[in-house]
Image 1: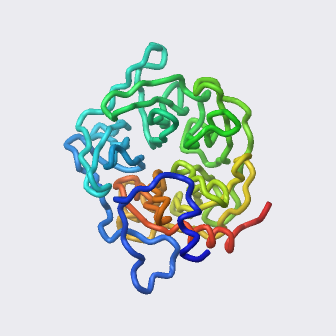
Image 2 (image 1 turned 30 degrees about the vertical axis):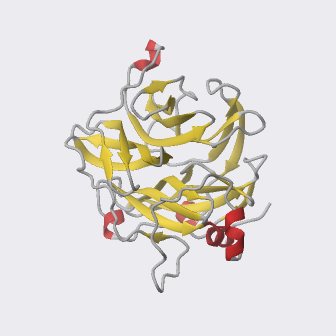
Length: 334
């Protein structure tokens, strides 16, 4: 694609103040890291043992988000945060207290790996929620101050609930990964839909692990990006090495009307744990993509990812270059 096509690729809003760093001279990868990484240290707030795998969105000309903050008792909690530039963050010291009318699910057991998605008139939050095992919690906020909890989307066990940013075939849509009650040694990505954000069904298989860096399990990452080429999806893949799991990131293009149909999918990873902050931490060898800011007018994408289950990092890519990479390095074509 040439530069004249960039304004036509992303179907979304402009984010003129998107965090951005130009590709370094000599860089040969399609995704490059911020020179300021990690942008959020593990101890940004007094209670935190680590801050990682967190969701960021544009908000009122600035940025807001929901952050995974494992506290010093090693409980997995969710906190809200604000930033003027997407780099320097103020995270609330107290965890989010969801307003919930259903006492059965109102007792917050744990929450981790949130995603945030603007749909119609509010910001929906999904996360891995503890309810007799891990499942997908669903809530929403209008202002990142008051949060409301809805019904869990699925029975246990499930992780990586990622909403699409608009209805598809007049239904809310979500990518998710059925799992077990432990540190799942398997995992495929599925598509599910709902008429009301409460009852979920019409489950469809999207894709499975293959080999190499994505041979053990896979899971959806940031909110899918609508493009002229299909839904652009970042996802994580896991390799089981002799020293444990290794989490890397890839990308795929899904059919715009039937997102369970994969058009292209990267065979090589686009980001893997290679720096000190990705290889050393509470969980070594993790690069886990969770959120992406996209500027439609320039095609710039700022990718937020958790590193070593300890800190939040930032990487960048250009949508035209990334889509070309996905197409030219695809496992298969449908």
